[in-house]
Length: 260
Image 1: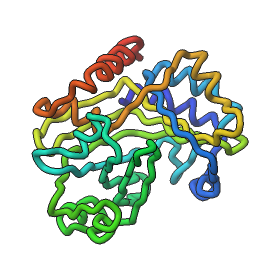
Image 2: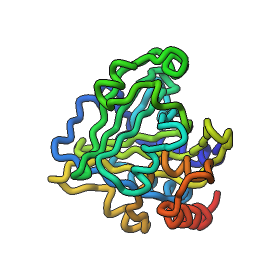
Image 3: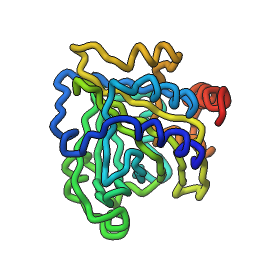
Image 4: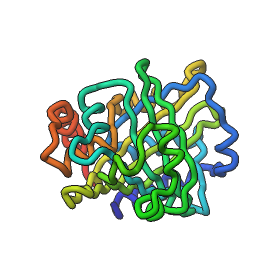
């Protein structure tokens, strides 16, 4: 991960900054979301090509921000994982995310409905430890998901670094996650995906995108990637993961294609 940081930091440092407050004012009214998977060297080439077209989010003086996330699921049955694995809708994810730059922590509920639309709601909580030890956010969890903390347990933790870009017209955002590290609460296994990056493009579908031609030029193709499901698959061999095996092979191929 250190090599990736050394490679990417000068590239984002060359972009003009945008503050978190300015970011919060951007509203994408007709939003579409698309994920892409690539490797670190190709991401570097993309960032070079994107210069002069994008702002980079600056948080507390950092343009690459560390995140920590912990996911909850049903013990033993892992219903949330299985619903995603089988392609079932509607489905739910429960997680606690901490922005390590600011130590802000949120309990988040993501729900995908029968039409494939994802909605996220969240509430501030004191810390991950307060959620695990004292069930902070219990009322919010019940009201949004129908679960209580007595029914679910922490299953997977991850850490990663994030770059957030906004185009000059402020009609799209890109989040770029890399340096993924997973920890499985059940098996106690850890795993890294240090050589790949996940790009998520959130754009207003009514206007042209400056990044899409660059993605096509570099042959960075759309690809689904759930951090919870991928991380769980590579750290818990006891779960059925047949549906994810082709995706894991593709990710491995992308990671091995180039190295720093």
